[in-house]
Length: 217
Image (cartoon, rainbow, N blue to C red; front, side, top):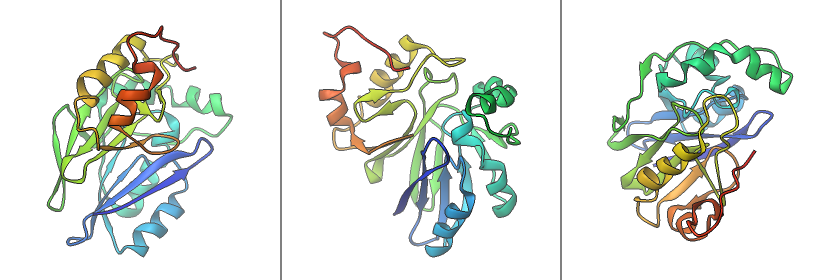
């Protein structure tokens, strides 16, 4: 499988390009900005975008999705429980002091346990609410890969102080849906460096039951 991760935009959101080496089909996850850079990498690998997957509807992850759709024709997929965040995109833009991007409802709703296909490679949608109500991760078991959005980070978890966030829910999502994955599963977080499920199970301070939780803000 072809995989590239590009930090894009003001907040350096990790946009992932996933490509099948045989069919040259691609899924682009979280094209939050810098669409010209994303297109350049797709062209370098001779990939055709078939789906645009959004892990959650925060502006830094979704702002460039419609531009990429208009150029490639690929549908935008995300969980519709994040539509209330789309409705306040102007407020989100105000947090960053930037212009409000055009963001539309998803072309298709990504429900829990739905399987997407990247050529012959299956990718399972894991609904992991807590950072936002519709937050999701994409698990590619044959590649030992998890695209985690802003649910799980190296040494941290997603913040829960923004609209729709819930600290108890995010911990439940991580423990019930992510920590059950094999230890060697590589985790591509929504920001920052990669990690593994085993490393986070063992050393992430937010996931240690004996310690008092202090949630990121």
